[in-house]
Length: 201
Image (cartoon, rainbow, N blue to C red; front, side, top):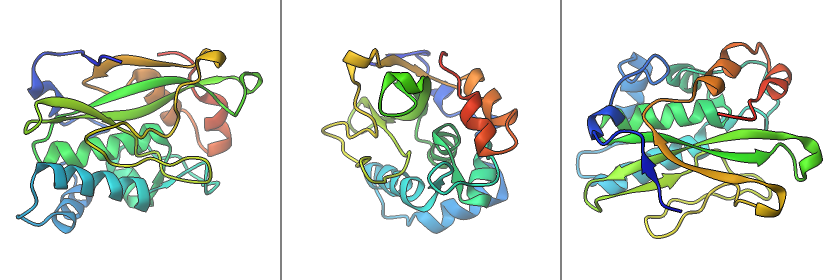
């Protein structure tokens, strides 16, 4: 699939946003902890991706009692769903001057269409050294879900199953989708959030 940038200006993929709050002290502290000066661009992205994937739990996997949204909230509570975790990965990498966008998939909520559909969020990162965008999915691994960092091939959490009408959206957005953010902000717990997951952008 050919990815399409919402903006031709890479600076738009570096902006600090309300939910991508990389000036927050918690984000700054974590950035200082994660990276040493000798890391190159690819190593920085891999380190950030693997941290968010492995050290931040997916809220549904742990039956979390709260809902996080802002990157700083995700870091504080150490959990979030894909919408929130993509905010954190964007915040960490944007703070390092690496352009990051938001991408989406249309997926079944469960294993089959009778469970309903929802929007899944992931990130796209622009590698200046490679002169191209690469999608990365920091959802978090579990049984049946395995994402990897790679600059050669995509290893996303959920391969598209066309027979179930699932699909990739090709656009790399500069900001998180308003429907996904609204779902986070309007839900007081994960049970409510599961019911509020949007099925369209």
